[in-house]
Length: 156
Image (tube, rainbow, N blue to C red; front, side, top):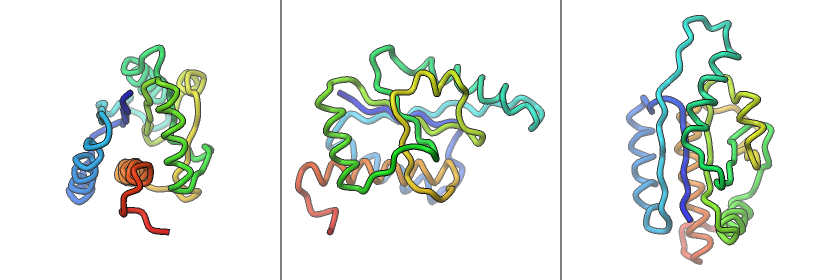
């Protein structure tokens, strides 16, 4: 099993890149983890949000296999504690399918993506930039694996 994180657009801020790289290195000690960065989609006018979401959705679906378990990071998704998230990861690993998480573009996901998704996950009721969510998600995934391994990273 492996985990993929699909994101739209590059990470611009160096402090976020540094944190992402730090936790990606740590996480790869536990599992095959790949972050796939898709190019930003530009439709010219900000008013054509539906077209932008549809184009992003097509790019995302090109990276998702038929048997992948697709989880959208979405403000309306299920929320977990770090410990419960680690249990969720373990359950999904036991199922055997590759696990694909997606952080969409600035306007969310297309209806096609919502239809394909197996689940939705929310990291907070607050709104964060898509670039910050990348760091938070990768750190929480790393934390989940340290919890599963009984390591001292997570404190209660």
